[in-house]
Length: 497
Length: 95
Image (cartoon, each protein chain N blue to C red):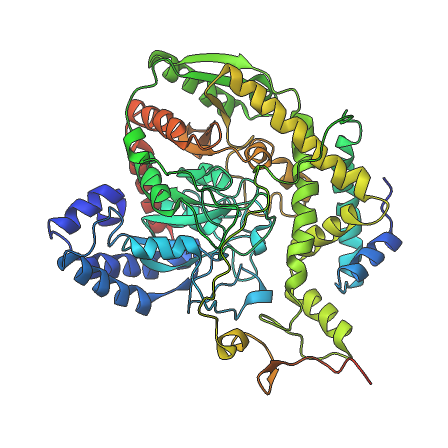
């Protein structure tokens, strides 16, 4: 196997045994990006110089016995809405085309402490508003498994970078389904942690009561390792938990005996593609054979999920994005009459259509006369949805279903139909509305050879149980089967270019 | 609920976003469609329920009031498009 195909722990062993040096591994990854990225468009910024400096520094720390972390020397990339000191952080928007943060996001600092090597910043939908990475101001990202298809979004650059081996792992962010859905579309593993498990300091705000950072990886073990490194309290984010963070790698055991897995009937109804439904049924069989107790449950409030999510998220977004006025940072229009005109023109020229649409909708649901009918009603519907999930968790330890109702679709297929795009989020947004953790893992392929994602939703702060189930599933169906198949598919794509 | 051109212009003005005629047309039709999804919660029975702003149960998180190393003026201004004598610069707002 080539270096980019190895897991974090496999690369860690090679580094520890001095079979590969960190600078050599970093150079290898940078060369790979150079070779492939024109085909896939994963990166907005490649931080070559900084990566090589970091590689030399981490190697020295390791050689001097000053570093003991499984992530030491492993090259990774970060979504472009997570602040990196001295490195461009654009949110894939013209509005922040020149923004260089004066500080690192908490999660980035944690990874640096662990000796991670930052290769660069990966593409996304503008301000994380989208599900296909087509709304980036800079470029489109293509699904490495089929470049005519989208990689999902909004963390599409991150998922494509992991799938194509242009990064060993990535940090993405979630507001709706922004890690799980691209993970599913690209055959990767991704987790949305419990709200509050990971600090949001330095994550550019979209909808603050939903936003979280999480890893995108090739395997469940890699995912557990990275989450363990970034989780925990941060004085800069008052909503971050003070709970002790368990060692998630201890949950990586192939044992689901006695685990109660609930499958909501609403998650496998006719609206879901048949191949995806069958993959969920196959997963039920796999878990049952491994000793889990699988049963059908009901979440009879799914009709409220998408409206509730969008009303609250867009209301929060309209408020959060009010900060972009052309004064403190980012884009400013060149011609204007006065302050208000400057602000209007700056925002008009700096934001793309999808961002404008969401700000306007958010402004509408918060405006006088509509506030109670939409915003306040949605907050109450959030209570209903949270209660229903709480009730479901009295009967089971995990709620299982598909990540999305479809697999990766063709580029351009839904970009002009925001309604269709929003409905794609139906199975991912419940975990954001309720703050629950949810893991996406590959669970087979559809008739077009595109990966299908399985979603395991857990109880609050019980990431360990979903990791255990995810690991068991991955090991049972054959470790890395997706990775090796993906490598072939990616290699074929490269050859055809 | 009915979302019309006048409302679109009012929202754009409130949100300080200038829109071209082409954008207005596109946004009006898609926003109308999206509002029709949002209307899906109007009939939800929420009587007696409290609104849930946040999933955490946190209230009033306090920390010690400690003096920390502040960012320098130079760092704070480094991303501004225009500065003047160590301040953010904007068009004149008073005559």
